[in-house]
Length: 474
Image (cartoon, rainbow, N blue to C red; front, top):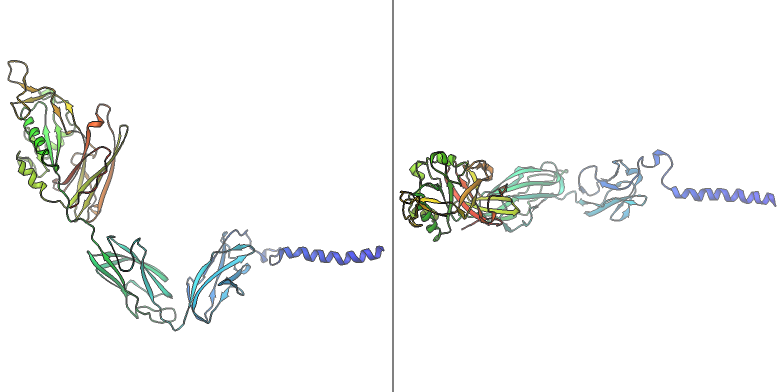
């Protein structure tokens, strides 16, 4: 009996050993029969770098693990979901194919490739990757991105093989079957992109067929003109007896037009008998730059220095400027949290400009300060103080549009780059400002404007706090 038992065991043990080894089928214990690193994911690729192959030509596949290890020899490959032998495939018929591979239970990505007739000609398909731009579409994109896709790999396709009308190509790049370029229209209207026959070849020397023409219409969305707002910077003072005259005329004109923007820049110096509580700290820059030689002195759109830029106090001088559309528009966006103000100026251009600057002012309204007057200049004759003297004052006079702060480094402005002031461009700049506790934030406003290199104002805009404006396009 013992002998029989030993015979049975001698038969069973080898069977058990062979059965256990099946768990490792295809993956040996030595380093040469399995990947050196743990495989978590696989990427399949084509070593040739191409995705189009001729009939009866070997297509070679490569498998790379997430550890960047070549694990091709350890993987099984499937073309159109059918397992193939090794990592090479060829087809006697043309068509579109998919390929993936597996290592144990891990599956790679699925890649696509084409098999084409060796005698067929290559052809480029022209499309655009710019959102909303398709063959035959009309948009206002300043440039569009083009994509050129060949059905067969080529190494001699160059920018010169592309013919365009109504614009220019730039940034041409690519290889094998995929190329790209940027098209810039030279004006509004219909545009075409073509690739003529026999301009490039595939790897077998076959010359290309002509591509289907790509058509696109550029709609010039750049406005021709903008509504013009006129800026008047009133250099004034509470001690100035004639200054109420200009303030009154500007106030009355503002009742008839929304295109007049007034800034009151106060000058005061109590040490020389010219007191003004609302003296603007940088008013001297304005006086020196624009040749202010007396008071009142209203600078009209900064059109020149001295008398050339001084408002003659005639309404027609302002309304005639407002009647002429501008080639630049201004818009203001702002928000306020407690006393922290954020202001963005936006400027849009319908022609090319150079050497521009922008200015942002913060104004306050409803300020009370006694104003000297030399008679009834619109606000009444005032009160003789002291009695029996020749000094007349408008007691509790309300000062509006009072310049408190320039958010730009100077009231003369900060630079706008020439690249940002071309036709169709929109310049934007944001400034932050903490409003002093002494100022009434509920009675404040913003004025922003753009000036040319000769300092003259192109256009201006004013806004309350917390508003978002659009451009006043005509």
